[in-house]
Length: 432
Image 1 (tube, rainbow, N blue to C red):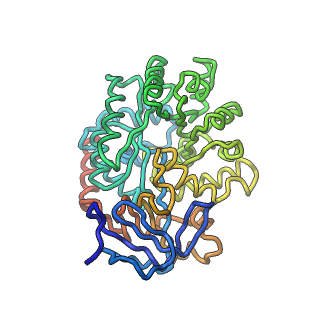
Image 2: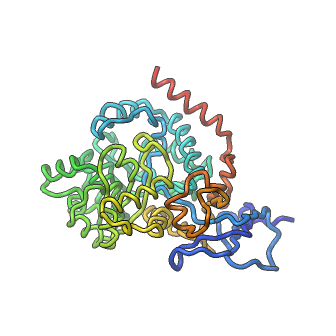
Image 3: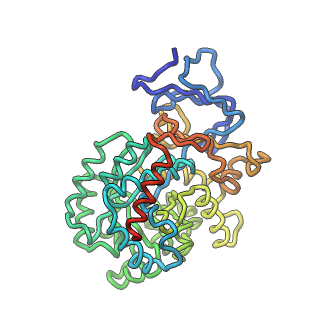
């Protein structure tokens, strides 16, 4: 009989291929990978004493690796894809995003989140760090899809019930193994000092890190300097939000002092290169931060400003833009970018058991099809992934030991066509 884990999930064997690992350093082996339920239980050479697996996947020379982690996104914002384009950030927010978001219902957030998850899976993304609205519906959509997510609080001046943040922190961290919750505010410019101090008190109470949109535009930095005489990172640290770590999303306009602060406090700078380019926000100084020892990760931001949830595009842009900004083709090398997309994101999100292909790690992995023109010849597979890879190479995506996407087919509990239909029904309602 096929072997089953104690939780009743299938044991799966990946063999006859390549395995990308991050410890020690980024390297590729010919190891097999066995998963048991939601856990990786064996990585190594073929063995005679293998169990009777539920499924054995012949990789045929393809590559298995840890899944990408989308370390900053707004999943349900897929409803704004190609609806709010070619506008500067302030007008984009005030004229398109906020008025349309006011029309979101719990049902719509559920359906739109399901749509966003399909896009994550087809891009090899196995977890998201999401900051948005209506978190009950959002969490249920992830649970029903079998997808892993970390919700980030988004406290701001528009929240009617400030204390709901603490209730959500306690609720979502105990809700389901695929869902967790981190503290945060939306941004300095949308959050009063009183509310920032309240969030700092929660960070102190629970000894938790805090995250926020930070130094995304020059106007944001100038406004903070005018209001407080400090840059956004300096202000947030002064208030106490970074007492137990955390970091910022975007970090596009960082002074030398800001970079030093991030390095000293061991904070995360989570870059969103496609969104920052499209909104003309700027290019984050990733190479300067890397040299200073700042911890780095990558996110897509929402599909309203990107417009895709595609980690391959983010990796390429993160690397290529640094080379232009620094005037140095060796800046931010491919292996470091790949580490940011897989390991950095997991660590920033608190997913310390999702960082590698190793026994005891969660079975969140992706198989890349190397039998495609853009992956040949195999001179350097790590560089191929970052500089030549695309979503066409994603053969399979697994989360918590479940294959959720394989060769163009989704296995998330309902058909992709039904998810598309409901999402488009909502769009028709808000545009009528």
